[in-house]
Image (cartoon, rainbow, N blue to C red; front, side, top):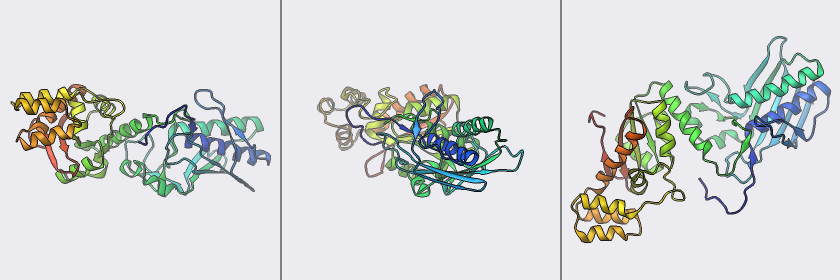
Length: 366
């Protein structure tokens, strides 16, 4: 996640809000011959934003409207993307059908809130789009039988920077949003992705997943285990969000993988491992070294070390298994958060990706 800038930040709108506004504009044009511009919609919490149209086209039985997504001050991968919706008259009695256009993905694995084979247009955006269709149909005496195709220009490339491939969403982005609003630098989207990753792993009956704090630890886990892509959860700093969800939705085995500093925070009881939201007290590492019967000089140096990795290196030179001890403590903390409903191991990797500490599964049969 990018560093949050100072000052009051401007909020933005989700892809689901943009698709809903484009749907309303296109269907209104299909019924009346005119595109409302700007077009106003009502979000799930009652806000009523208006969206300017970037493009529109009306043909017999079909209308298209497009809106440029504004994510506000959030570093959203889809900021500035063109969200285009085609609304086409469907056969009588067909109802409201959704299609994935260019740049919108298709669900290929179970575990998501959409069936396999469905376009990756999430339930809340579907409901929002359906509501504007029904409202317009009631206003103008239409049947409301339409086919809605959502496309995102450049969505295939943008999707490479999301979790979609791991979740089994192929061919592009997902159309997302539960409130319709993007709150800058919110953690909710990342945590929601973690939850969906766990859901997909459970639905595919995986017995073992790995929650990794970053790409280095993920690469380290790949060297330890032959796990499928969907078993690798990009936990980032959100250990608490991951473990608490697993407590309610358990899997048989979990490998937690991270660098020494972040795993030391977990060992100290922190569940948010971000440097801006938790700070490791040097006394934690000093106490661990004392338990390992380190010399007084090493313990005292640990109390005044600039970084956790400085202390780790001093322990390594002294032949002390500090990373193993921290992994064991972190493992105990993690097991407490899942109420022992999941078997857990903790692995610690250095900056070069070498395994430097480990608390293995208790049954040793992983």
